[in-house]
Amino acid sequence: MADFLMPKFGGDMAAGTLVAWRKRPGDALKRGDILAEVETDKGTIDVEVFTAGVLEEQLAKPGDRVAVGAPMARIREAGEPVAATTTPAPVPMPQPQLTPAAPVVPAPAVPAAEALERLRVSPSARQRARELGVDLTRVQGTGRGGAITREDIERAAATPPPAPADRAARMRASIAAAMSKSKREIPHYYLATTIDLHTATAWLAERNQTRPVEDRLLVGVLFVKAVALALKRVPELNALWAEGKAVPSADVHVGVAVALRGGGLIAPALRHADQRGLDELMRDFRDLVQRTRTGGLRASELTDPTVTVTSLGDQGVEVVYGIVNPPQTAIVGFGKVVERPWVVDGQVVARPVVTATLSADHRVTDGHRGGVFLAAVDRLLQEPDKL
Amino acid sequence: MTRDEIQAAVLRLLGAIAPEADLSRLDPRANLREELDIDSMDFLNLMVAVRKQLGVEVSEKDYAQVATLAGCVEYVAARLPVG
Image (tube, rainbow over all chains, first blue to last red; front, side):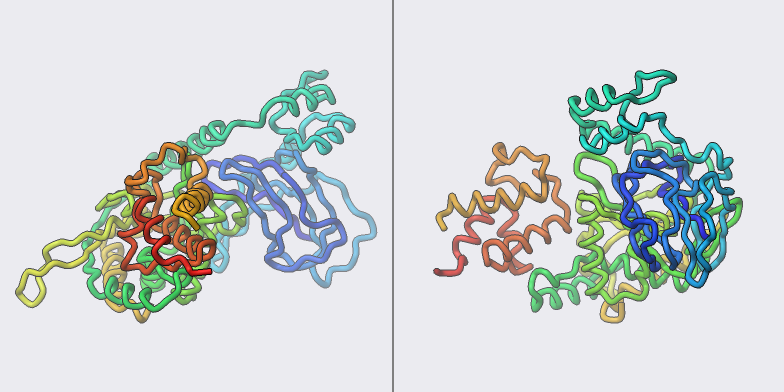
């Protein structure tokens, strides 16, 4: 039997609220199926399952606030016999498994009894909340011991839902916590290099000229692909920091910083970015940005990236000095593509250039390897047709 | 389509991209990217929407011509499929 745990979507996340189950007990599960929707400061996230089998038991109900690392459901793994009886929660809290092949964000070791922070809600209030679509975690209970009553639900239903400003404030707090942790704990080093984009931009313009608008590439997708391939060449950077050491990732999942309208940002992953052609990567990029801004991100997209790419060129910024997003170990910044004097064969010519920066965790890599990484990004961008 | 109808259609497309913006106050001559904080991805999505909804494909080399609402309306009006 395997436990389905509340994942951690960010360095500071302590718990998430189960919004809905997408599968029922008895349903067959395959790897990658969406099992649940969870509300976090990053919005509502679709949480996938990575154990094939059958959903044996749901341990949490919609509206429950569940601690990171706590079991939400039990899965009978493929080939496992049907249990004679099902055992209700609590179940032992598994320790996080960190393997080079599948790095995950470690769950804190909290006692199972404390793991499920069940709200005190009467059955009739819970039923009324379902009918009225009220999020129980947002309701202030006025019953005995703070229990949520039917009247509390109806009062909450009559109250406008949290304003976007509230969500923005929570996201701001989440970013503040993650960045403070980063600056407090991660000894950053910073490198920058200016890259000639003459070949890349000419190749891009020629290619886009013959393509319908849906199939056009943005220069940003070249940056992401070059970073992904450079991570293969400098694999020390492709790691997460967990439990006092770097845990390398076998796969290359590049986070991309997406600014949200109304404030805040999320940096979900373009998964297996090194293996995707530019057309496919661009389609995924557009889809990812869309889902980041409107909802529908998957848990793996938030937990998998080891390195984030951030680009502020659209805002006119020429150099980005990034802060590592823990537990990631580096962030690569790209500024605006600008025309600058450039010396070619002893002649000064105008060339489109971009400044690429690397902010990295000195506990994991040294400046030398960071420099090798940026040089690899530069070389890769000189041959865009091979990306 | 008249120019007013095209402008209304483009504003609808912009509304989907920048839902928080008060488009009734948008200066038709203002740069859309700066005025509405539109990034490259948003602008590409706008171009895709213009093609799908209005049937006009904007070449990448013509992006400067559609940088404003007024420019976009003129560009589309000049190329709108007949019939």
